[in-house]
Image 1 (spheres, rainbow, N blue to C red):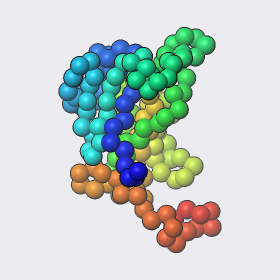
Image 2 (image 1 turned 90 degrees about the horizontal axis):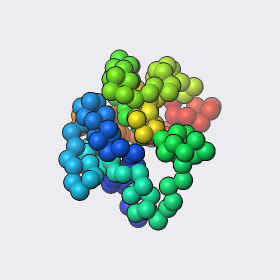
Image 3 (image 1 turned 90 degrees about the vertical axis):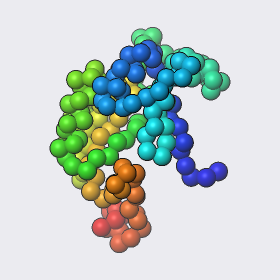
Image 4 (image 1 turned 120 degrees about the vertical axis):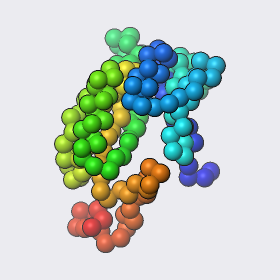
Length: 158
């Protein structure tokens, strides 16, 4: 298996609401047969009915005790890296205005870079981060650092 992700599909409770939320953040998608596809650099972010996605994966969609399909942590966090701290703040504000919830306000985290987290209306977590150690190419693709080069005492690259 090649080391690559082609699609990330988010199970959503209300496709129209999800489509409108991402549109408010500036994402352009194409709806095809009750599924919305967004080109996101070299991969695609897909919005699809949560029950249909669970069934397609051969899984039961088991809500938490409150029977709310969007409550709790779904076990996945998406990350969107940006080039400045100001972009982190602006995106968190835009997500909140669009109907998302900021679950961790922007701040310098324990590792030393600036980030915050919001959830979309279906509870999918998005970290917005400015990490100067992670290079963003002009097209927005992420280039990881050589983590083995000159490690510090705590094992992180210097």
